[in-house]
Length: 196
Image (tube, rainbow, N blue to C red):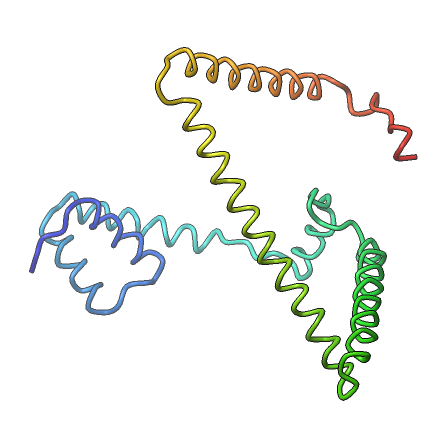
């Protein structure tokens, strides 16, 4: 039987404590621990700690998780209320309906056999073309930015110094804005006029 290194032995000890070892793996662990008194004492200490943790476990009352989650403030990316999505969904449905109607009218003039299917196909083609164009534009923009940056930075040390000064200046500006925002008391911030 191959001897484990110390990291593997400790990993197997913790897996045993979690109850994730098979019977064969557990037998191998017991054999490895029996070969060394220090390993055996470490295994005994972890087993005793596991028993103490199991005995001191406190069961949470029913509904505790739901009550705790209800008291937490909403994260910035979460919608505060499901109704806040109502207007965007209505506008999306309206724009989609108008696009399908106009495409259906145009398709009905060209091929009167199935205007509804033609309208759906036209809207689907429009969405596919816009996604393809957007992905291509995004890819080209990033490649162009990378080529411009590599062309700017290759060669002259003066370009590197100017780039480092620019990055440092942006970092200092960001830190200054963050420090100013942290220094303002929460009650002194007044909502701007466009939010009223």
